[in-house]
Length: 183
Image (spheres, rainbow, N blue to C red):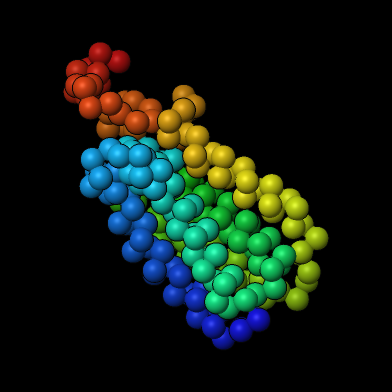
């Protein structure tokens, strides 16, 4: 493992991922509702849709780290799985306190905590690689949620767009103002 490169990548990943998350959140609007915009961007302003770019960028950056810094594979996968779930949890908890209009500081805090935790766990003296199969299951589960919940969101507060009062992909033909007044 290239320890100095790994340390640099983990810490610079916070800023790099923050920039990419900010760009991806607007991808759906920029691509005018295309499939790529649905998959990689945020289709509304719900907490879940704001989380999607964080999850995507965090995991893709982890793959880049894996290829360049070459950390110990199983330890790294376990650390990144825990890191992405902590990112999600921190974002959800902070989003309950801070309004969604101010999601950038919440995103920065979530990414910072996730990256620092994964760096600490990867370099930890204790071997967590025994949890590799659990970590793989955790990553599989988050990808299933990632690809399912935009099109088929559960009717939970986490998936509710407070601006429109709707869940998931908001159709173009819906008058959001009329829908908000009716419900």
